[in-house]
Picture 1 (cartoon, helix red, strand yellow):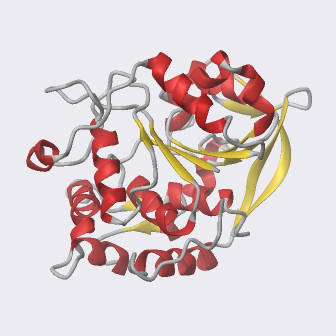
Picture 2 (picture 1 turned 90 degrees about the vertical axis):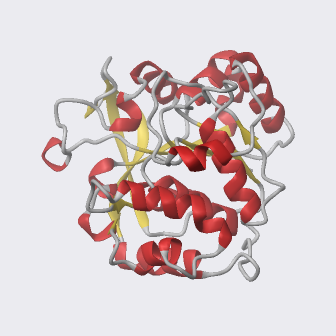
Length: 301
């Protein structure tokens, strides 16, 4: 079982990650991070959009759980599209914890948790059910250890900075953690812009119907930016153990603001050490170019 925890439909890399996960992961659950409540009903706009995208890809079997809100409104979709989204079930934090626990307790196997947003949902689950800590294997996008290679060396990277208390809770509680560091995901080699075939497939006149949401997300994002770094698809590839991201053991100290530093007496984690960007991009190109009708799940669970 793989649980994808994503603040989807702000930076387009989350949508690209979910498209790829829908085509490569058989047993999949989606929970939305940093949820944006809909003004008309209070349910989650991210959950609404994720449900519509998954249905368009033929993945009606994938549950979408509305996650916790951090009070923000970071979503890159126009108002007309947002108004057309079907409503999603509305949950409070008790429901969120109960639903996640019930899903995890359905299996005795390790559960892979793919963190592509703030760690609020996972922290809530672990505080309510600490007995699940040994069963969860976290692969989280974010964190940095080399301040010279991160754009904001005065603070933690976004996914940790957005909810530093939850990040600290999760990283201290879980025994099995792999971090795909921001200094590797923010590499120029994986910045996808309008000139890329991936962008053009989603936004062009021959784009399939399911591409309306991710295409609009990408186009709106690129109105003010030069492209989207494929942080989360790279993290997905690491969670699937495809070998593009290589890890090394590290001991880290977690500051109160969730900044990380090396410390011989710190927590033992695995951190990204190097990336085969060419092989990753070849895989991503194939995964996103394959139509849902012919894409296999590859038997991943």
